[in-house]
Length: 203
Image (cartoon, rainbow, N blue to C red):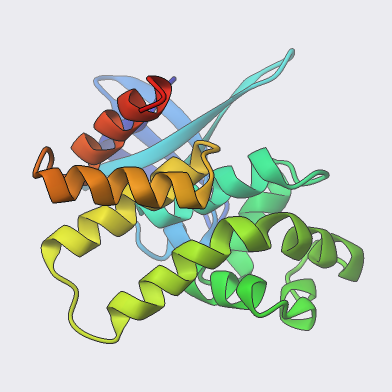
């Protein structure tokens, strides 16, 4: 799995970018939300990626932030009928925070306005994602009421990453909270690694 590219931005269009990594050019399909965050052509770039393997091609999808990639994976892995192209359309049509709010509030009308999505697809997204996003969104809303500490920010990031990997919200939340209480990890990456070990062991 290619998880990120560290190199130089060679070219950029609203739908794709080319990154030179040690003389190898990687074509990466991106949403508009990431296009807006790209550096100027010729500048260094680190872009997070998701590799989709098909019978006829290996395709890289790129994102400038962790929440964008996490939401992309949630859509592709959990909503029937949503492939990478439609997932990119969602990210291009609505910010991650606004999309989560729309799902939690069952705002079918807002979601169905995204280009490429109809009412039936919007209803399916809400039905299949609401439980997965609800706890995370509520938790984020609670911590947004005051300035979150670095520990809370890392915890939020770790929980959303675990959800994107297919774990239940309650389990991910509990595992991360337990690890932070025990003082076993500080960074989101460490929390995710330890939480995966913990849940795999069934403890």
